Length: 108
Image (cartoon, rainbow, N blue to C red; front, top):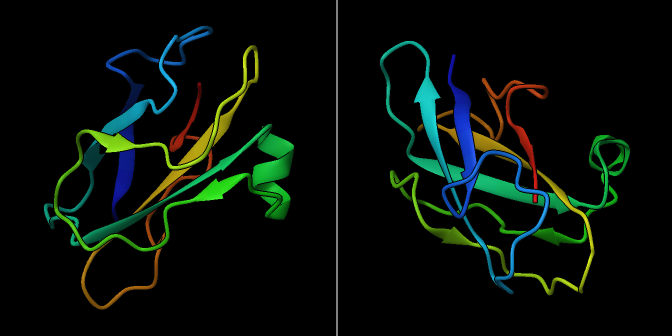
């Protein structure tokens, strides 16, 4: 089972304030030794919004083994808070298989 860990936004864990309009996300994987073949990033204003699918932005499924420098595709406003969930995927599994809802979220 894959799990996204060590989640960062612009190399920071849960930053409270960043002055970048398109912050980049990165993560590491923990799991059974298999590698990621794709991922999906979903962003919302709160964990509650993430839980019910009220997203402000979704990356869609990105076919990539890379876990570094994936830019936010939405528009951030001044003082706007956000949460995102990273859903790693490996070949043959649906998006998010193995993602831990608590361990795969970060604030930005």
